[in-house]
Length: 87
Image (cartoon, rainbow, N blue to C red; front, top):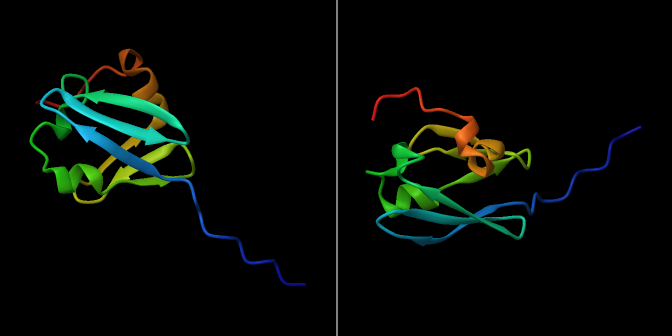
């Protein structure tokens, strides 16, 4: 018995706007704001690097140009994820 081929993954993350304070991301119909003060890894990134994002497993985001991974939960509740990295 052969498994049916899965369809194309239509879940994605879209960057809708970038400002000097952060950027807005649309995921599954919900908009999130990622402030550079909460996510300093993006502060010096180019727009091209920020917009090249992949949504994996509906809860994991990956920016290949920045080699950066974030769980959606850390975007929804950044106060629960204190920064460890130097910035």
